[in-house]
Amino acid sequence: MMQIGLPLETWSDDPPPEKIVGYISVESAKSVFKDEEHSLEGPLDAYYAPKDLRDTVRRDLEGTGFEILAESQLGLSVSAPPQAYEELTGGSVVTKERLQYAEENCIRYVTHVDIVGDKQPAALGVARTKSDSTKIDGVVLEKPRMFNAVFPSPVPPNTSKFHLRVPDDVAFLLHAKPAHQAGQRGKGVLVAMPDSGQYRHPFFTAHGYHLKTPITVVPGTSRSKDPVGHGSGESANIFAVAPECVLQAIRASNDSGDLVGAVAAFLKAKELNPRIITNSWGGDGPFPPAGSPDASDLAFAAEIKDAIAQNILVIFSAGNGQFSVEPQVPGVLAAGGVFVTPSGSLTASNYSSGYKSPWFDGVNVPTVSGLVGMLPRAQYLMLPIPPGCMIDKDESHPDLPDDPTTDGTTGNDGWALFSGTSAAAPQLAGAAAVLIGAKPNLTPPQVIQAMTTTAIDVVTGHCNPRFNSPAGVGPDLATGAGLINVAAALNFVQNNF
Image 1 (cartoon, rainbow, N blue to C red):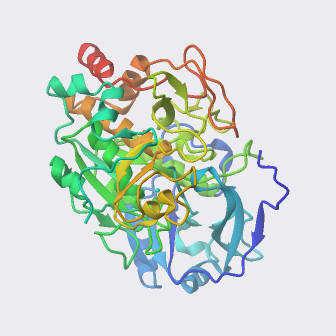
Image 2 (cartoon, rainbow, N blue to C red; image 1 turned 45 degrees about the vertical axis):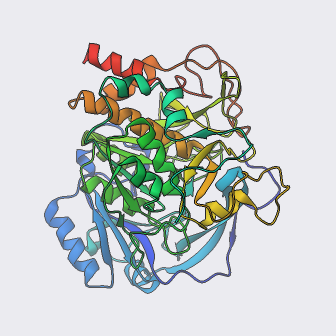
């Protein structure tokens, strides 16, 4: 539990943004906003809204200042000015500061947008409409998500700090090379990645990787830019394992690099009907939680379950000390971390989250692990990023060249050392693409079974100190089933499915 002597939540003096990305749930037989104790048990059919009702809500919203960003069978992702939300709900849009685990395992206040009023629920970012005639079940303002990590040369620079390179080191340690030599390289498998954006770094061009034109869901943002560098860098992990897959990047960040459209990007990804959606981000809340997940979390959990029901493999990073609903949703492949030392031994990454879900019976986070660095900054993988982006500057510390946390690169060379479970999720996505490329009819549970059955057991170390779960013989809360073994998983699916 977070105990540092500061209030969990406090009011902010900052005004709300000019446009707010939100989620509108349309009325259906069951509701996560009115009956939360069911926790999404059973099939999702009762949560699906009739098409004619969704069309009615869409028209009503568009007529009152809302822009529709994406749509699913459960609801719509939208963008609108604060006044439109206030007119819809009868409440007031305000900003609040919530203490949570954020980037680089630090605890800080993160600005949230909330709707308050006499008739509004207490849950942060959740609201109800002022009229029952709108056919809207509930309103959710997107919570800030955290990146779980953050004209250049296509060749990475040299640095004295111990690190791994893409694609070769990652492919070798995850035992993907034998699969590649056997002709299994994930050819044509579509992987969607909602993240900060995708910069067409010369690294991707030099290797001939297939990147589709990025999509953006935050109005007014450029498809070609990635102000943070997170999505661009972490996506290299996918191609290290599945060099012939197809990547559809979906930018969910605003011009400042804040991940304000994560849910919208996830819904957009579903619309594309990919085989895999990999997500290197999540929220954070108190651990252990005080009660059940709130309606906001349940609404997004329903969207995740809907993707799985459509035969899409959904991967979420376990977190870097965060506790979040996304990796806990039943059926999600939750990516944890294993560190390979300079001597080649394996230990649990103490940067990664690991815990037994208090919300969903039988769910442990993580499911299985990829390659992740260690505290304090997990500077482990040399990854390609936009020159001078946020991560390029933050990891290099050009003003502090003697700082031991510098990664040994410059702040504008387009390369940086970073990882986190943000790296593990796309590594697992690449592994899944290899398996699906070999056996196109594989289902998400079969992919997960293959990875967990054949993973390399990791028996030493602990996960992040917030949870402090130890590694041991067999599956554990530190690394799940262990480090993925692509060649062994491929052999498993070829012989069993």
